[in-house]
Image (cartoon, rainbow, N blue to C red; front, top):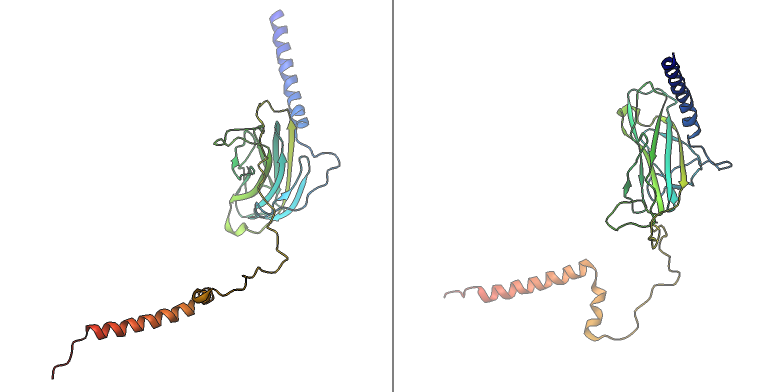
Length: 256
């Protein structure tokens, strides 16, 4: 009787844990920050990536085959999780494989420790979910390593495999980047964040600088003959003169 009581208690405890597990997983799902303004656009390359913040939701209308880019800033000690969902309002002719990739400021691809990074959606599926959990951002690292460092990170969402006739179909994309800071345990400090230079060169308002006036003698006219046709003409004349002189030196005299 005592053994049966212990077994019954173990079964009830296991059942209770099974019921609590989904509730805990639902609470751990990433949610946008309260009051965050949704982002409704995406870039088409690294240079035009749309800047977002952690906890800021993204809702974009796109098409199958588009490359979508976003960028966000990361600090040392943070863990980042990227979750995305692609919905298909219209039916498709076949299955498609999607991927979410993360790159650092040097455009090095970062590994995902968890999440469905390259899921496949069947032709009958109405949506597909993607995810990528990054490693903790370090405060410093060796130059030869690819460890995540503070700076700008890029998220790219795209489709890798699909029937050609499905290109251009409309899709609804939702994306969210969440960050949890736990503090960095590294002793070193990065000299500067890994942020690519995005500032273009400045335009000169002043007129072009003209060379100073002066007589350079015989060599003064050489820079003015920089066009190709002038040098071609001079070369042709010199070649003709050389041909005439060479013919006169090498021809045999006539016999009388």
